[in-house]
Amino acid sequence: MTTVLKVTDLRMEFGGLVAVKDVSFEVESGEFVGLIGPNGCGKSTTFNCISGLLNQTAGHIEIFGQDASNLRPDQIQRLGMTRTFQHTRLWREMTVIENLMVPPRDQFKPSILESLRLGRNNEPEIARLSKAFETLDQLEVPHMAHNLTSELSGGQSKLVDIGRSMMGDPELLLLDEPVAGVAGPLAMKIFSSLRKAVNETGISVLIIEHNMDFILRQGVDRIIVMNEGEVLMVGTPDEVRSNREVIEAYLGSAGVEGEED
Ligand SMILES: Nc1ncnc2c1ncn2[C@@H]1O[C@H](COP(=O)(O)OP(=O)(O)OP(=O)(O)O)[C@@H](O)[C@H]1O
Ligand SMILES: [Mg+2]
Image 1 (cartoon, protein in one colour):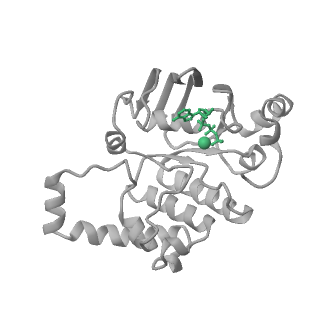
Image 2: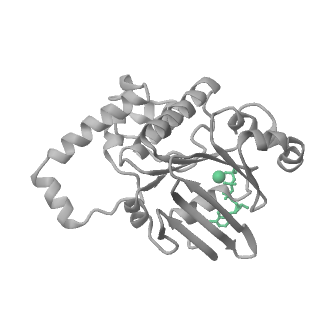
């Protein structure tokens, strides 16, 4: 198995606050990994460092074997990694299909030459459009194609955001709470589509989820548990479940079954 993401002693300080304290973990190719932990424990900050939005205070990040510690978000995107944000970033005045045609913000920097080439030959655009429809099919929401995203529910917007992140055929996908605020059945459907994508395409997925009871049942291969900026444990869902008392002691309300915040 190949390591697609290797985080070593990652540290992020904001002034006096140490948001991420010497965090290390790996994601292997074709793995579906959960990253969980209570509010403010450093999950999104870890993603922000990996995706190049923040310059970490210390530590190393390797993506597909390449040193990605000091790369910009668009350079990281070109390595084959895409991420989503905790708060969906859609173009509200555009339709679902139009949103899928626009690469995720901060992650794409077309050169002037590329833009000119796209302008003269619209073949890539046609291919992209058919891929956008395919993606909606995969997510089982083809009927939403021509809806304005401003008309979608929160859960539907999350689906479009996930679809958008899949448009560039990433080999490594980082999803920040893609099902927060999404009702149980749809949230489970999203997880099972991701599981299917991992199995069928060999993509690797690292997914932040807040609710431990929920993620324990969603078919992830391994779970990284963070608390107060540190990795508390890494293990299979069974291993995490069998450490339940310890985890509950650390996670408090995050371990309680129920809706996301
Ligand atoms: N840009 C920033 N500037 C200053 N402090 C920040 C910044 N980003 C995050 N923090 C702080 O770092 C800590 C970790 O925040 P982070 O967003 O990583 O938590 P999280 O685990 O994603 O939480 P949640 O589950 O609520 O999304 C928090 O105390 C937060 O206030
Ligand atoms: Mg977060």
